[in-house]
Image (cartoon, rainbow, N blue to C red; front, side, top):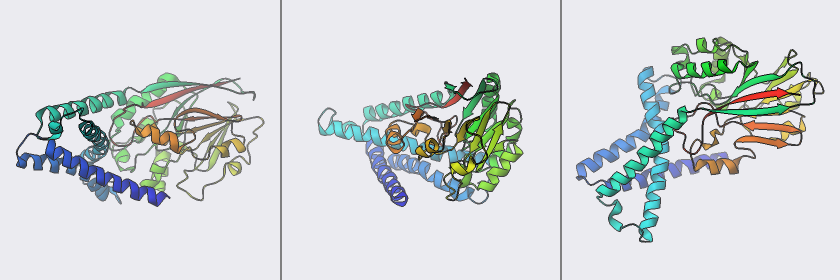
Length: 369
């Protein structure tokens, strides 16, 4: 099934690319030479992502940081531009079919070119501005278990630090965390975008040491893309308490944090095995599990609260609809029995820095009796 989805996605992207390229060529009111140049440049924007990964795998570095960043930014942004150009041209063709728009609206059309360009600028400039406007989401958690005192947590997922979320950007997030003055910080995977190379080059670990509270994190699927051992070593360098199929008992708060390895690891431990030495009757249990699949497992194991990420809530509309149908909880709070859940849309983002119909967030949770 997974292989089928990958093949279908590749075929869809290729088909959409051909369709959009055809529409761009016919839309532009220029000579054939400039039509060809524009179409070639557009297709190169997609190819640049392939060039980036072809050069980066193995070393995690393509020539140097600046060049790697350019190829990464252009290539990943082009994926989202392709999606909205495909939707736009498809809508135009349907409107032409029912004679709402004239047939020549996409044929050597200055009006059509200006209209499509203006729409893309509004969507992507607005989406970029919205991405940087991080949402502060609050969450109230209560328990009948005896807490030593109320607990304040800052929770994040999907930071995707690397070639596009650089140290300077992360430094602002650290300032945001410190302003909250939490008892501890939880990160539900995908702290690393793909490769640790850019994090090491920029000494991002120093920024983690500025966080004025203990940080606990689990592994995500992106930690495995560039090598789980590399990510693990970076976590240690950054002073992060990495919970890879392990549990941290915080007696001073009456809380146990259970960190499950990402489901990329087919041999990861069961939740029950991670709770073997945890007094669930006394301690409030928090599960960090990056991908929010099989939520029933946390309920059956008696977990009090599960925090996950991974979905990004699609990053842009209309992928949100796909996420809603893929997951029992694709975004936001949820409850099964006595177990509460929160699936975050992520603090950072994969690829192009656009939030269209979604938002980037950090969660401030208060746990009390």
